[in-house]
Image (cartoon, rainbow, N blue to C red; front, side, top):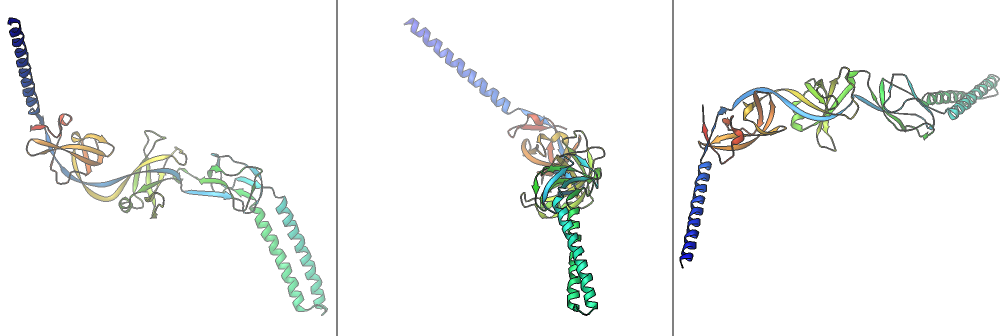
Length: 351
């Protein structure tokens, strides 16, 4: 009996200890939840600045072309390969001219015969043997034969492909020995007579398109040339949306100096629009969880509480951030101890 009472007292003691422990834990949790975090706040100011439009696109050259023969035939020679540069007037490809030479000889023989017929008919006309109509018909035959020679000679000139400007071969579409038809592309080329012939084609929204004007300056970065910033100028805007993407195209002319990119390289541009726009401005220390142009700030509410607010960044430096959207009707933001805050935190604003 004594042993049972002893066990009973031990169980009661353990239960009391557990209750005391739970009570102290609860009190501790309540104490933690009630703990205030000292913070500093800063006023949201406004600032007028030129809007900066960010866009990405692919590099190309101002002029692109597909070189082809005017007549069909067998390719005799191709003198350049893909990626090779060429000079204006350089021979790039030629056809076998056996057939066109035969046509030219045939046209020349026809012309000589027509001239002989005309001489003979003219003598007969002078002797009143041939009529005026017969003489005129023969003269027409001479003219037609002469024009045939001119046409065949013109076609022979285009059995050769010469470069119309300095450039390089982007794609070789046919090879030596192949039979090609009239107008079938043999080369895809990009003209580049200088560093300023390179362009960047961007896709922008309709609002951004309206804010961009010809001649506006831009800064371009190219992934292939890390650490370099290139100047560029807006020189062309599309007047219709791109059918595949729905965006509007804007073209920048690049100033690359000695750098030579490849067609199709990816680049980023920041266009400095002429129109001034008012932006909310906050200290850099207020920003948390920034990801690209998206970030968050904490805003004091209801005296000693905070609210987490998403914002979109327009631009920033080491001291200030210009906010594009998210701070409408907000006057203050938290600028210290933001990493320790959540929306259940209690704050104490310190001076």
